[in-house]
Length: 522
Image (cartoon, rainbow, N blue to C red):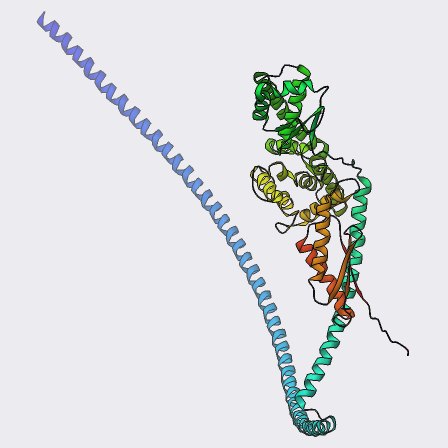
């Protein structure tokens, strides 16, 4: 049994050994086969890599050859271009050298000619010096002969000659000045007459009427007692509420209201009218009516200002300025309503500005606001032109409009044409027929001032203001003022009148020089 098992074990081991040998042989064969395949694949890869490398090398050589060919062509092209540029530069250098040689030859020739001219000029100068010496000698001889014949020294003869030259120059200058001024005046007057006449013809304004007092008619004298009240309490309450003085005893069947402020006077007039119609007149009622009328008056003033701006056709302006414009409706200058006058000046400004090619809107704005200071002259000291200009400047108006308002009465010099146009339009509006009523005192003072200015000049014998102060006739002494000086005198009088007087329109100055020769036959 043991031997059988041992035989079986031996047999198993033999099979195992044989299987191991067969496995090793198979593994070796597989390994050899795999190695041969790997070697074959490696050879293929190497061969393929070698072929790829040869292709890349061949392509690189072709690319290098092409690049070298391009570089060679570019080098040859650059070299050819540089050769051409060098040849062109050599040609220009040769031309320049030829031109410089030609100029040098010309300079040498010019220098030679200048040397010859210098020599000739030196000879001429020497000859002229000799002639000058001979001339000076002859002049001295001639001067000595003239002094002996005229019995005058050299200084006396020179002074007499210079005086004659001076007089002749003055006459010539006066004639030239007269001609220039006459020509300029004719052209300026013709153009100004055209512009002003066009503006006046195109504008039509209303005639003015006298409004100096506020008078309220009464139906009977019994109402006066109720207006006065017990111990005068009603009239005192009314005057305290309105700031206006009430005059009852001066005029029968009427009450006269007196006050400096025209707006307050208008409030007092309306309040008094309502109290009389109502019949209830006592302090409480007076204060109630005056307060209500004051509120309505503020609204009226604002409405009048807005209407003025709308009628003028300008852009909207500041509300405070509109309020002052409305107050101008209750102010009068020589019985001319100031707001109507301002609107008239604005329209005239627009017409003249359009003729001169200026901005019409700005011109109208300056014309409408030129008297704005009259609405606040009782509150602020100073000329109304400067006060108004300062007020509108603080409320955003532009500098040309501010300067036009400030300069229209020459308190400040005008900057630009607007100030001059405002002065002209203001004079047209003020001096047209029916615009204003001038008091006799003011008229006589203006006449006296005109004659006083004319008499202040030397040589004036007497003068007369005629045609209501529109013309000044000046008579001079003929022995003190000659014809040329008379022309200058008229000009100087006109300039002094312009500097010292304010007047509407223009004043004509006529200087009369008359020589009378009287002889008596015996």
